[in-house]
Length: 206
Image (spheres, rainbow, N blue to C red):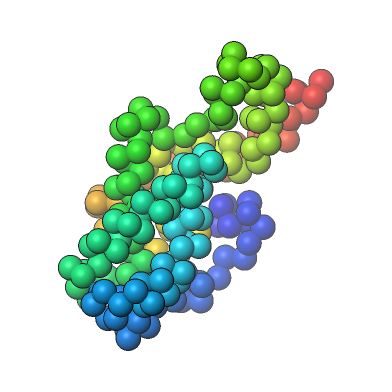
């Protein structure tokens, strides 16, 4: 898969993905009942996945911690009403993260911050420093940044976090057909960008 290969990761079968593991039923029940220790265990169990998803979806690293904290505040508030069923807990958590990103995007009027523009445009920092901030992004991050927010989230959920097409659709509140279209277009655009990236860098260096 194009994303996992670009990240230097193997692409195991869905059943073997680490993200397929869910918290045990006993801890989940205790967390739903308000047990503080169980809730802390619950957050620790899922926080790495949430941080990774937010980081790859937003690509604004300085905002990830605050957004992850807000995700889990929303999750814990809603947890007593969560009914375990066919859907995985992680899919439900990702759906909350998706809605938070949508709220954040409406407030910011954009989903991706190329670099800290306030620091790079006349607020005590030079344009050269802004260029250096952009260059710090990897080719993969730059490729992801060129995708639409919906394509980027769908790709991260499916390729990296191991959700099925149906689970991605549930998390994003869309149809399976829409998810498949987004994935197809995202893969095509990302593959094209990664193929061109070395020549683009060579052109810049010249």
